[in-house]
Every structure is written in structure tokens, then in C-alpha cells.
Image (cartoon, rainbow, N blue to C red; front, side, top):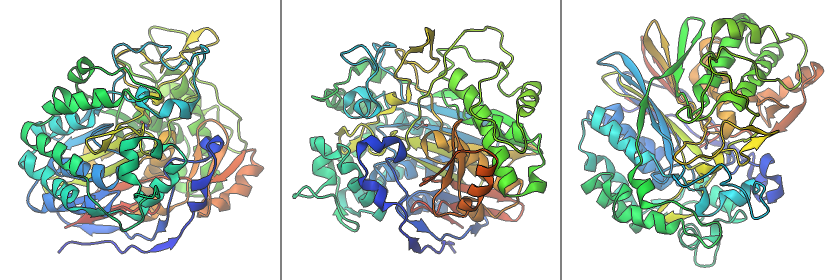
Amino acid sequence: MPLFPIRSLLTATALATLTLPLAAQEAVQPENTNAIAANTSVQADRFMVAAANPIAAQIGYEVLDRGGTAADAAVAVQFALNLVEPQSSGIGGGAFLVYWDASTQALTTFDGREKAPMAATPEYWFGEDGTPVGWFDAVVGGRSVGVPGTLKLLETLHDRHGRSDWADLIEPTKALARGGFQVSERMSASIAGAKDRKLDAFPAARSYFFDKTGAPLKTGTLLRNPKFADALELIQRYGSKPFYEGRIAEDIVEAVQTPFNPGILTMADMAAYEVIERPAVCANYRDFEVCGMGPPSSGALTVGQILEILSRFDLPKMGPGVESAHLFAEAAKLAYADRGLYMADSDFVDMPEGLLNDAYLTGRAALINPSQAGGKASAGTPPWQEAMLRSPDTQLERPGTSHFSIVDAQGNIVSMTTTIETGFGSRVMTNGFLLNNELTDFSRAPEADGKPIANRVEGGKRPRSSMAPTIVLKDGQPVLAIGSPGGSRIINYVAKSVIAILDWEMDPQAALDMGHFVNRNGGTDIEAGSDAEELSAGLEAMGHEINVRDLNSGLHAIMITADGLIGAADPRREGVAMGD
Ligand code: GLY
């Protein structure tokens, strides 16, 4: 029997923030928490999927129930998310995937990150006055669109690890796109929130996401997407070829020629796109190996630094509270300082080899005062053969992303974080899907103080990400798959949840429910309306600058135990875990 979680909507926490002016961009997350749901952990014996939307999770569940692999289910879930959670991810965007192969007992990762057009230069984001344009001015329009990688990633994954027929995996989403699906509460709130952020300034997006009067679609509206269904039909028949070399590629190249901020993407850029399989980056954390996505993501390295620094303190004994939140924030400051200076697409820039070096991190941990906040951290000097002076990057990616975790009946595991960058991406839509604005994940300034910024734009480069799809191993065996959306806060959400589950032995759902405390090498963010608010006074007394705010993670976790699988879905979104 399938096991379903009990969900009920309790409190609407952040609808008010949806109408804040653009000037408050950094205070507002383009995708906000629209409700806090009361989820319970879900247990299963054979397989499980945890994803950000119940329709997508159900489609994945059915694939697994028919004997499909985790790779098959990932394909089906991603196509479904593109339709029912279009603001967050889809084939117009990019993704990273960590994969555990049960037959070879090996971990690998797939990099489906977007790429800058070959003609892009470090001055890509300069305006007419020769200085970098503002963030939101860069987001909207075709110029922010990188060559999408998600579809090629799904195809690569399916070729390597799929068992089900490719077209069958797409069929449920195609049928929903033709027949219609009900707009979810979250999708409706996201559309309303993006109305004042230029979503209705782009004709294709306006006619799809708004009614004839120009009002945002309401929850429960039956929405059809025949253009997406037609594109899916082509992809069912011919795989990714029409998307990268054929009719859909032509449409994408044409669509990025927006009147405002036209892009420079070419058919040659589309045809040259490649998914890259890369070794997983693993950090030793007590008895565990916490493994994830290396560059161009900063996810695994930064999560790994936080955890390895914290392994020098007795967090398991401390438990949750002010003392451990302080240490977490201080470790995060140190890790984000290194991230800002060193981390970028390592196919384009040299990176230190010793970012997870044991002796180096012992030295970094020694910088932490256990009873006093230390102010803004500077990057360290990890072991590095070729020194190259760089300036820190202050770029903060915004959240518009989704994460799902899947375990199949054979024990294969997918941990995939997928994005079109900010909510609704570039706002440019073609063939019924949105195109990403991932090129705003590059630093808009190419240099500072006369020194190059590692994450500057370069032709064919992949923008640095914070996405941190993670699989944790113990004694060489997987024990946890987890990840989250949340822009550059992803790293904090994932690291803290790993600690809650592994060190504090919290039930996965309780770990995901726990209020967030976040530090990105500045003030300490505390999640408004959560139990984390109880930490504020204690942290303030230790010298932390506290910002109480909405913190919209979207964690989806599956724990693999000797007694079966335990799944959890973030209460801040509308997702579920389902298994059998
Ligand atoms: N666009 C979000 C990230 O890649 O971190």
C-alpha cells in the first residue's frame, strides 16, 4: 500500500512580502514561503520519492511502482515539475544530479549546468555607462539566458541508468499539459508575486500565467499548455535533438531576442552543449562521507567546509541551541569567505586543491571563538599549487529552484537540484516553458581592486552555483539523500539539516521542520515565525547581527536505514514524500 503523508495548511506566513517593491529585492525571495504545512515523515520498504509538488511526486511514484529505476523516475518527475511548478525548474534551465549506482556501489555526479554563449566576455553585464547593470535589470529578458542543460542531463541519465521507455516517462506530463492541471496554491501565489516583477511584460508569459483581464491565475484554475505538449511530443520521438539542434533550438534562439535585454545565444551554442560527468566531492564528517556536486557548484565544497570545521566541536553533545547555532554561523562565515574568493567553474579558473584539506580546516576552525561572534571572515590560504590573486565575489544567487530525492527498489539513488534561477527565470517563454536567467549567477563585475573575480563571465563557462544535491555515506553505504532550493542559502539549509539528522538524530521531518539559522558571511538570518526565533537573544548577546526574515528552503530528504526508507518534505513548500 502506498503511504501518504498527512498535510494540512496551518499558517500563511509570507504572503505579505509578495507585494514589496523591487527596491527590497534582497529582502524578498522571488519564491516565497506561501504556507507552512504540517508534514509527517513517511516510511516505506521498497522505494520512495520526495519532491516539491504532489502531482510530480505521484508521477514519480507510479514509475517506481511499475519497476522503473530512480533514473526513470527522475526523468518523469522533472518533466512534471516543469509543468506544475514552472516557476522553479524545467527544460529551459539547468541542474546537478548526484547518483548512487547500487550495482557498482559507486557514486557519481552529472553537471547539467547552463553555459554562457561562446561570444560572452567578462564585460557581459556592463551597461551603456561601462559599469555592471543592477541585478534585476540583468534578470529580465533574453540576455540572462544560458544554454539550458536539464534536458540533456535527463537524456544522459536515462541512457546510462534508465530501464523504462523514454516516451512513456514523458507521457503523463504530456497528457496533463493537453488535458489541463489545477494551478496549485504555490504556483498561484508565485505568479501574483511576480506580476510586479515583470512577468506580465513578456507576451508568452502574460498569456499563459494571467487571465484575459490580466489577473494572475487563481489556485484551482484548470490550466492547459498545448505548446508544451507539442514540444514534449517532439522530445518523446526524437529525444533532445530538436531541443539542441532543431525546431525548439531555433525557437529558443529567436525567443532570447527580446526587445529589452536581447540575448546573444546562437544555434552553435545550443548544439555544442554537453553534460559533464564529474567525480563526487566528499567531505569527511565524523563517521560519514557527505558527498555532492563539485565546481561549477560551490555546494559540496562549502557544505563540506562547514561540516569539517564543525567536526572540531562536539555538536552531538551540544544538541540544538544557541551554542551550536553560534558555531554553525561562524563556520559558515569562514566557508562562504573561501567560496567568494576561490569557487567558480574550475574548467575555466584554477581553484585551490586544499579547500577540504584537514590541516587547513583545523586552522580555520581555530579562528572561531566559541563564545563571541567574529565579524566578517576573510578567505583563508588553502594549499594551492598555482597562486593567482583574485577579488572576492559578492554575488548572491536568488532562489527559483527545486530539489527531489528518489530511491528505487534496487537501491539506486538520485539527488537532483534543478533550477531556472530566480522565480520564473528570465520571464522569456517558448514552446510552453520558461527560459532560465542563470547568467546572473555569474559575477556582474569582472574584477575588483584591479584583480579578476573567479566567477566572472567567460564564453562557454558555467556560472557558479550554490546547489548542493547531496548523498551521505556511512561505511561506504548511502544513508541519506537530501538537497534544497534557496539560492546561496541552500548551503546553510543542507548543512544544518545534515547535522540535525546525523548528529542530533532527529527524525527527517523534524529536521526539515526545524527553524532556520543562516549565515553567508554577514549577519545571521533567523527564520521568522519559527522555533529559531528563540535563538535570537542568545546569538545577539554573543555579538551576532540578527535579521529575522522569511527563509524559504525546499528540502526533500530520504533516509536509508536498515529498517527501510524514511522520507520528508519541506513544510515551507507544497511537496510530499511518497513510497511503498
Ligand atoms: N541559481 C541557483 C544556484 O544555482 O545556486
